[in-house]
Image (cartoon, rainbow, N blue to C red; front, top):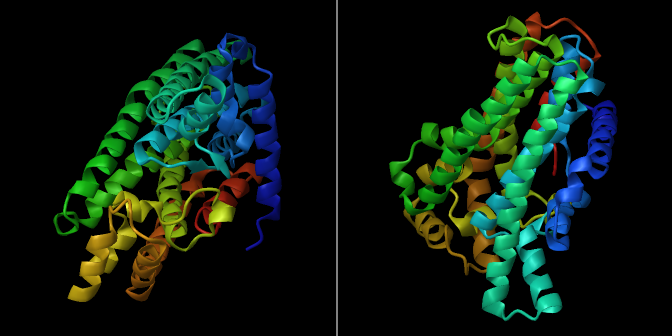
Length: 360
């Protein structure tokens, strides 16, 4: 399937969101300079802006005016960004979107600009990244509140802010905690349902929110059980889970330059992915020994990582995960049957396929 039309439409919305964020009145409060620079760091590196696009597509699919909802799209982009800033600290990643992660960027800057020693520089970089995330969370709320000036029911604005700051954030944090704990839990004691639950909480729930918020804004309704709201949010949530499965696949077979982040880092971090779980359950004793020695080993060599990758491919873990992601997409599509046919509905369906075909 060609995705030229989808890519074009995503780019249009990405540019609108970036323009709104770069020319936003709130950024005058981002001080001192290292805070300003850190807040905009990932935004300037790029990114796909998928979540705001999904929100805007969902708004349009129910007949809403997506241009009036740009602040909401910007808000979910910033909400997502602060979560990955903190996620990168937790995962100890040094690269993001083809550049340095914020904590690594400002570790280096503190040495060059402030003369910090190595130990203090690490602490400085992490501190700046945490504070940048804090600023972004507040910024997301402020932008969402602007919707009331665009004709959105103020009660709906408050509902969506509360939903993101309590329900969505709580599920994200819960998923993140499991993601931290599971590397210390034996692979034999985990089942597929537990691993999928982490994927839902870390990724699916925010995509579900984007569909839900977009549909509720498009309808200007507080009824979160409206048939279109339920249909679209169920659809986007399942697609978001498939997105995470594809992310795990790319973490094994993706191209590091295309991805803009390290391939194999999930293995070094000890992440219990569906790929690893399936492969381990089908491995012989020698393969299990290799996998267990490498999984969670921060000092694992490239050759050791590549050996595990080969095992994951040979035992069908990657293919199994591909088929699982495909099943999530196939099961999601029927949710849109009740949504009127339109350009926006078509874009949502194209986006669904793109979730499991993308290479970055």
